[in-house]
Length: 58
View 1 (cartoon, rainbow, N blue to C red):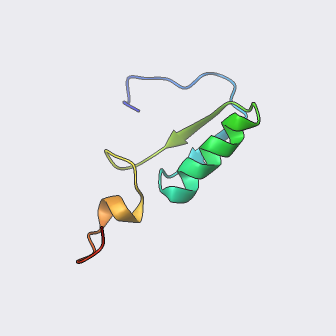
View 2 (cartoon, rainbow, N blue to C red):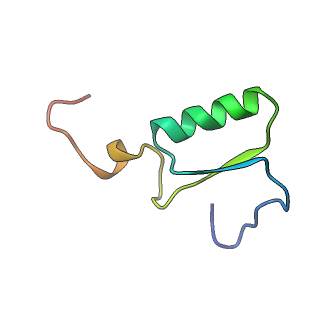
């Protein structure tokens, strides 16, 4: 989300972090009809897999 964008005034949940758990929580909340958004510090999703590289991991 860019700083120019604004969140809706009412959300059921705000999820901090777009790692595996954050993405799954977003999926489950939306599946149950809740409105939710993820806030992520990085430019992309992936959590620890975005920030770190593990030799041999695919």
